[in-house]
Every structure is written in C-alpha cells, then in structure tokens.
Amino acid sequence: MYASSCLAVPLLSAAVKPVVAMFYYPNPAASALEHILVDNWGAYASNFSSAITPCDNYVTEVGLPAINSRRTTSAQWLRVAFHDFATADVAAGTGGLDASIGFETEREENSGSAFNDSFTFWQPFVNEFVSMADLLAVGTVMSVHLCGGKYIPYQYGRVDATAADPKTGVPEPSTSLEDTLAQFKQAGFNQSDAIALTACGHTIGSVHAGGFPTVVEESAITPNNTNGAVNLDDTRAVFDSAVVHEYIDSTGQRGGPLVTSFNETSRSDLRLYESDDNKTMLELYAQGDGFQETCVDLLGRMLNTVPAGVQLQPAIEPALIKPINVTWDITTNNQLVLSGKVRVLYTGEASDGPISITFSNGYTETLVPEENLGISAFKLSNSQTNTTTQYFPFSISSGNLSGVSSFAVTATGIENQEFQIQDKAFIVPSLSGVADGAVSVTVAARTNQPNFDPSKMLLKVATPIAQLLTLAPKVGRSDVQLLSVASPSENIGYWSGSVAIEKPTGAVSVSLLSGGDVIDILLLDSGVAGW
Ligand code: HEM
Ligand SMILES: *[C@@H]1O[C@H](CO)[C@@H](O)[C@H](O)[C@H]1NC(C)=O
Ligand SMILES: *[C@@H]1O[C@H](CO)[C@@H](O)[C@H](O)[C@H]1NC(C)=O
Ligand SMILES: *[C@@H]1O[C@H](CO)[C@@H](O)[C@H](O)[C@H]1NC(C)=O
Ligand SMILES: *[C@@H]1O[C@H](CO)[C@@H](O)[C@H](O)[C@H]1NC(C)=O
Ligand SMILES: *[C@@H]1O[C@H](CO)[C@@H](O)[C@H](O)[C@H]1NC(C)=O
Ligand SMILES: *[C@@H]1O[C@H](CO)[C@@H](O)[C@H](O)[C@H]1NC(C)=O
Ligand SMILES: *[C@@H]1O[C@H](CO)[C@@H](O)[C@H](O)[C@H]1NC(C)=O
Ligand SMILES: *[C@@H]1O[C@H](CO)[C@@H](O)[C@H](O)[C@H]1NC(C)=O
Ligand SMILES: *[C@@H]1O[C@H](CO)[C@@H](O)[C@H](O)[C@H]1NC(C)=O
Image 1: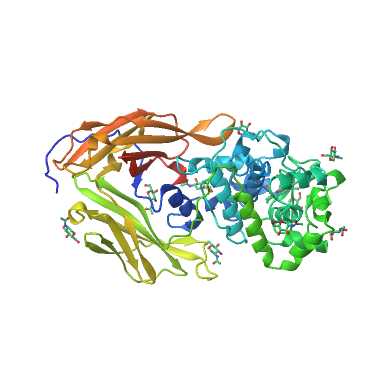
Image 2: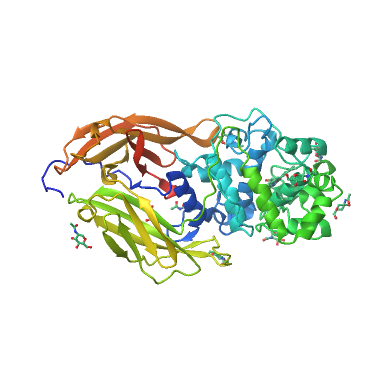
C-alpha cells in the first residue's frame, strides 16, 4: 500500500531507549499487573518475583551483607501493607491502602527500614496506570502466594495519597491492649479478626533489635545477624501456621519476640492473643489447612480497605491467551507492520499443538513458539503444579491486514479469544522516545479516511517523577502539540511533536486521542521494571 517515495523521515538521536507501543489487553493497568502476578520466573519474567525468590531473600543488599542482615523482603512487603492500612478509619472513609505510608516513615510507629526498602524496589514499576498503592497490595499477594500461602484474589485501582494521613495509630509493641483493639476496630477489624490477622502477619519475618531494642535485646546483634533479628516462628520465610502452633504448643519461637520479650511491656502479641483467653488462637490451631483460607480472607479485606471514593476494579484473572507488545510500526524500509507476541498459559507443561492468529478480514497465520518457556506460580484447574507460559511472535505486513478491526487466537484446549485493534492512527515506536529531558513522538495516520480528521488528534504524556517526603512518585502530565511533517508515503501522514519532561522514575506513557477516545498508547523507557 506504500508508494516508495523518498520523503524525509524524522529521525531521533541514537541515545533513544527501546520503546513499546501497544494494544493492551484488557487495559494497560490490568495488563501490567497481570504480568507481575503471572510471569514469575523464566522467559519474560516481570522481575518482580525475583526480589522474593528465594523467600528469605533481602533485595536491598547483595551477597553476604544481605544474608547477614537477616532481613526478609517478602516479610517487609507484608508489614508495609499492614502499616499503610492500619491508620484506616472506615467510618470516616479515610486511609487504608493508599501508599500514604511513604510519607510517614519518620513516625515512631513506623520504625524500621521496611518502608523505604520496599518503596525503592517498587518505584520503577509506578507509572500513569500503576499506582504505588496497587504495588503495595500486589506485594502482599505475591509474598503470600509465592512463599507457601494461597492466592489472595487481587483487585486493582487504588489511588496514591498526596500527603501523609493526618491520622496515626499503627499498634506498637508497647501499645495497651485496649488501644490496640480500638485501632483495629477503627480500621474495620473486630477482636477475633485482629488476633487472626496478626497471626497471619507474624508467620513470616523477624523482630530486629536494630529498630526494636525494647523488644529484642541488642545482644542479638552479631557479625552474622547484623540487625539482631529474632524470628517470629521457626519458618521465617514460609507462610504457614507455624507461629500459631509454636505459640499454643510452647515450641520453637513460642509465638515470637512479641510474645516472649524480656520486656513485659513489649509482649503485645501475648496480650492480644490472650485477650479472648486464647480462643481465636486455639481455633486457628484447630483449622489445619483452613488457616490459609482464613488468611486469604483477612488479608484480602486488609488490602481492599481503601479511602471512600476509590473504586476497586474486578479481580485480575490469569489470561490463558494474552497478546503482548502488539503494535504497528514503520520498518526501516518504510513498510507498515503489525508485530507482537501471544503468550499462552498452560496447565503443567506447554502443549505441542500449533496456535493460529486470524484477523477480522480472514487473513490467518500459524504461529511458531519461541524456545524459552516461562514459569508461573498460578495453579490452574485445581492442579498442584506450576503453570507454563509459551511465547509466539508474529510480524505481519499491512498488505495482508487491510481493514482489520480485530484478531482471534486459537490454541488447542483453550477457548477462542478475540482482541480489538485499529489502524486509523498510531504512535510510531521507532520514531518516538525520551532523550535529553524531552519526549519526542511521531504519530502516523492514514490519509483519506472518512470520519477521521488527523488534525483533531490529541497527544498526552504522563511521567512518573520523584516527589519530596516519599519514595512514591507522582505523575506529571503534559500535552504535546502535533505538527504535520513529511511522511514516506502518500497514504499516510506523519505528525510530530515533543515536550520537555522531568526525569522519569519509571515508564513514560504517551496516549493518542481521537474524538475523546484513547486509540493508542505507547510506554517509553520502562527501565528496570522491564515491561
Ligand atoms: C498488634 C499488632 C501488631 C504489632 C504491635 C506489630 C509489631 C511488629 C513489630 C514490632 C515487628 C518487628 C519489625 C522489625 O523488627 O522490622 C513486626 C514485624 C512484622 N509484622 Fe507486625 N505487628 C502487628 C500486627 C501485624 C499485622 C496485622 C501484620 C500483617 C497482617 C503484621 C506483619 C508483620 C510482618 C510480616 C513482620 C515481619 C517484618 C520483617 O521481618 O521485616 N504485623 N510487627
Ligand atoms: C468479627 O467479625 C467477623 C467477620 O466480620 C465475624 O464473623 C465475627 O462473628 C465477628 N466476631 C465478633 C466477636 O463480633
Ligand atoms: C520496655 O519497653 C518500654 C516500652 O517500649 C520502654 O519504655 C522500656 O524502656 C523498656 N524496658 C527495657 C528494659 O528496655
Ligand atoms: C553465626 O555466628 C555464630 C557465632 O558468632 C555461630 O554460632 C552461628 O552458628 C552462626 N550462624 C550462622 C547462621 O551462620
Ligand atoms: C494462652 O496460651 C499461652 C500459650 O500456650 C499460655 O502461655 C497462656 O497461659 C494462655 N493464656 C490463657 C489466658 O489461657
Ligand atoms: C515487550 O517489550 C519490552 C520492551 O521492548 C521487552 O522488554 C519485553 O521483553 C517484551 N515482551 C515480550 C514478551 O516480548
Ligand atoms: C514452581 O517453580 C518454582 C521456580 O522454578 C520452583 O521453585 C517451585 O518449586 C515450583 N513449584 C512447584 C509446585 O512445582
Ligand atoms: C501476505 O502474507 C504472505 C504470507 O502469508 C506473504 O507471502 C505475502 O507477501 C503477504 N502479502 C503482502 C501484500 O504483504
Ligand atoms: C524515606 O524516604 C523519604 C523520601 O526520600 C525520606 O523523606 C524519609 O526520610 C525516608 N525515611 C527513612 C526512615 O529513612
Ligand atoms: C531484577 O531484579 C533484581 C533484584 O531482584 C535486580 O538485581 C536486577 O537488576 C533486576 N533486573 C533487571 C533486568 O532490571
């Protein structure tokens, strides 16, 4: 469809980093979060799971210092979510999971390095579509799911606070039983809920003398335990019911330092667990495997406690068929090509069967898988084994795709699925990027389309940027003025523009709008988040 005219193509400097322009299914937020939840290890792993693999890993340091720190990233993530939640006032509709904890790290009640350690790891994953609060919640889901517990259904759509929560009230080891129960109650959890939630939390990790010298004696600090960690139960990095059993049976860590502290004032878990004469702890003890279900329920309630007005989206389901990095682009010899990959998620091992992609104009291709497989912790159809992901790349010249509005993917044993697509106008990945403090974008649009006026297109840029007093980025927004420029073809027009941005902390997103609808999105510079 292209006349090979030799008009000038705008070029970007060589410093431009790789980009992704995509049709995201079902939307950019769900696509990114599903990637974190599902693509755990192996090919195209999201790199989120690596921080908690193995589960006793401490991602903030490396090598021997990490081991000797006796800190546990998976446990930190769970504790951070609790502290963010704990200042919720459900009657007033304030607080809960909103990442306000990032502004509150200097408070006595938030002692310890867990908060900034976790935010530092999560920061590059934040962008226009993914809030820090959603990452805080996904952190807990991942820690529990990958480290011995069950999967907590994950809803998204949390909104980041722009300042500290004026309310304080995270229970501390020295807090009286009365105040502790009142704090939980304000956050929507009654006495038995509070006891069980605390037992669910205190099944992984440690209390550290560095940070809590009134709970654990400073003599715990040694060359191979540099923060003086004393574990909450005998299985520090396994999400299991050991803490309950050791407490009731007086074995192992006997419930942990918050039960056994040398300092009676600091025995907050003992006070809490005994407050109903051990009734709840004995029930948890008797539940066996049911303990895991109880924790799924309570931790789910904790993660879904959000300020009034925040609307959580339906729980993300692992996609059996997922198109990834699907985008139009213009090749170096001025060909218009649609490329991408299809991820197929299999119960157990990958199937040998071919898969095919069929476009709405009838054009079909059989796809050949890449060799490297991915591994997911998701268990499908009650299977106990990990699932496998397989990737099928495609690259199809526009000549075969005239007028397409969708494509369907067919794979053996998996229901056919259809995905929408459009080719009115798109952001050209190879002619767009971030360099020298600015985003430069080229948009391509078909000429002579009825009901489509390219001069009415709008281009918006959203940049996650550092803000003071918290490691959670805020999102800066700007519009790009588009000007018509020379294009390589008569059938297509090019529009270009650029805008200065502050230094991004994660992926910069560019959205192309026509008539109020977003018709294409491009993620630039995703860096270590590695989308
Ligand atoms: C009465 C309520 C609670 C009190 C007083 C309390 C207090 C503490 C203290 C002092 C530590 C030691 C932190 C450190 O040394 O780094 C700790 C650790 C921890 N807490 Fe709690 N906690 C309570 C409830 C909860 C709840 C409800 C959860 C989660 C649902 C939770 C999750 C954790 C986790 C996972 C750790 C281990 C952190 C690590 O190893 O870095 N806590 N808690
Ligand atoms: C505490 O709340 C849970 C869940 O909402 C409920 O099942 C339980 O009966 C309540 N317990 C008390 C003592 O109110
Ligand atoms: C015991 O804990 C309380 C409350 O944190 C503190 O005031 C007191 O100094 C501690 N006692 C010792 C011996 O550390
Ligand atoms: C840590 O060092 C102490 C001696 O200082 C030793 O007894 C202990 O076994 C060591 N622990 C580990 C996990 O290496
Ligand atoms: C609760 O259980 C603990 C651990 O078995 C025990 O030390 C304590 O005395 C019990 N308290 C009550 C009130 O039953
Ligand atoms: C999608 O594109 C990004 C950026 O180029 C890349 O890091 C990622 O590996 C791609 N995903 C797949 C499945 O090819
Ligand atoms: C799932 O895969 C991980 C990473 O390869 C592995 O450590 C784990 O043991 C596997 N779990 C099961 C149930 O196969
Ligand atoms: C359409 O695809 C076939 C391969 O399926 C290829 O041989 C042909 O060149 C393509 N046609 C155009 C116009 O790109
Ligand atoms: C955590 O990071 C924020 C933002 O950089 C900083 O203001 C705060 O002091 C840090 N907190 C701690 C305990 O280091
Ligand atoms: C992935 O995360 C690990 C930490 O778990 C980090 O060391 C590594 O640099 C990350 N990889 C990429 C490609 O960003």
